[in-house]
Image (cartoon, rainbow, N blue to C red; front, side, top):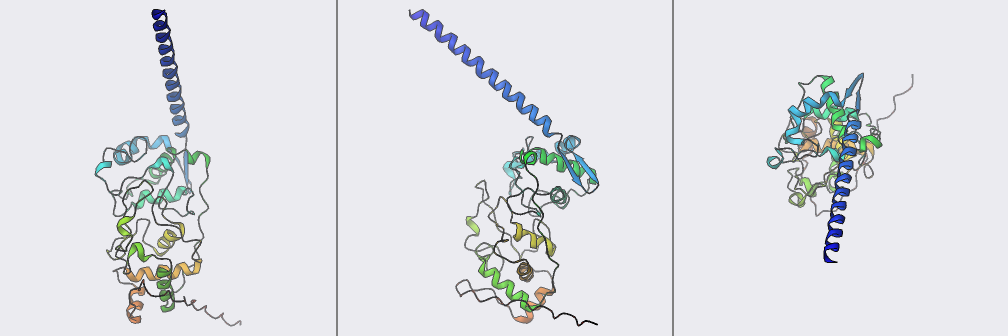
Length: 302
């Protein structure tokens, strides 16, 4: 009886083992199939079409050390990097022209590859041809299933930039206090606010706020339009939210102008702030009412 039970047990064990082995093999085949399907991913940059397959060698040579074979940000260099490389499999990107929570456009990824990310190990890859960059965009996209099932968000509309005025800078300072930007960036923009040392990204890794006073450019670009996009789209995967629901488009320019006063470069905004004798905000003071920027009178009709 005991021998019979032992034989049955061995048969069951072998059968279960074979089942799981076959299941694992099938799963691997599905994964390889999905990989082959995703390698057909394309990108479209103007009149240039990028092909994921064409970027395999460039990715292997220039990107895999940080972003890893699987695009999960776990390349061989990862333990020594801060900030950590982007995990492409999440389909989540900081620098976008699209609303928070949506996929970036192909142009967004294309620009990021060329521009690089200051204060990180991501350099500007502006030595690549447009075709190489377009191919790399397609390759980056192929890592995440989101690009197979979702479309990029619709880029936000950026209204024309108005003239910088003293009233706009003062209104921008009120917004800086009202939106509590100082809690992370500090009252002088030195990245030393009370929350600065507690911040974490979406993968629970420490992350620092941007220091406006250190002279470096923001990660997603240094133009006024770039800065506008940063707080109107948010930096997905970081504590930096989108303020699109809290700030009107015209007010957003006021905040851009005030943030320029915190930077050490010579600018019209800093000159006006100096003339105003503008002092850092007092977090303990009541938030003053914002003064709407004056609207220019319409030109008389001829």
